[in-house]
Image (cartoon, rainbow, N blue to C red; front, side):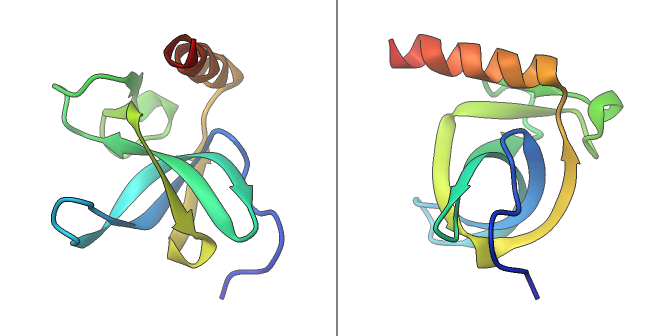
Length: 106
């Protein structure tokens, strides 16, 4: 059972139930937390598909497999869909994600 209140921070990698828009299928997948508010967690998808565009996340950093943080796949999940906390990324990687997002927003 999850505790109430803010639990996740920007840069946390979590394992969560994700519903895919195209198939309505629910799968357990890693995701990067952007922020948490009102029991909702805003996340970026993480994929092991090396052909996807995004920011690399390596085994050395804590990933189970070398992965890609997908800047173009941002979605909201309920706190209840979070299965577990995996690890937090480095400050350098957080800064890189912020910079890449700002480029897309400008």
